Image (tube, rainbow, N blue to C red):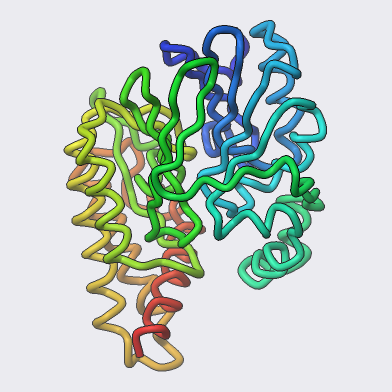
Length: 315
């Protein structure tokens, strides 16, 4: 099996899309009774890796029934249109709030440009290809689809974004969590344990909703989750408790600095860096001190942006 493909058993695989760095952005593949579904679509540059993985596993392109999006942020959905062009029988499933952005990605592209800048966003994601309306299936809370008899249940899981769903695999009881269960970066693995850190990226962070979404997933008592960033993780009660604690810690920072004026973002980022450094020590991550802060640098800035947008809504 090639280095970009990880077999987790039960017909579940992770395909490393190659976006950003190794083990940053996964497309999960679900195979059952000769049919297949892809969970998330990464970015345009990852499409060849997805197709190569299908070929390696002897899965014909016309055997892919679904491309399932957890949400429409472009590191999850940017490659969907290009991928759908290669998969003639696939339907695209997406939260009702996100469907229109897959059919006409103009507003989604504009919002991404606002976060990253147009030039950087184009370099990261390429041109976003629209998906024909008749190939889009909306998946509101409680919706189900079947992959050759294997049921997938969709839960509305806002908090990271209002257009986020998490998907329960009926065979294993495991969940595909997109960004709701945070980052579970491989670089943080220590002492045989995986570690989670919340992602609060703009523009729809809602701490109360995110807490409730995590609790809703945990009400099913899943033995494992599959995070887009990155892959399978067990010991879900511990991860959920860490996520709750770290969400609250970051919100506390934002509330403390809400009246800091022009210095607010810088002060929030400074405090978030302190949280990251403390968590690295607490959990015994392989990355400590400056190495941990350099690694989390872009995510500290994005979390700060998410907190600032949330503060502005509250004020």
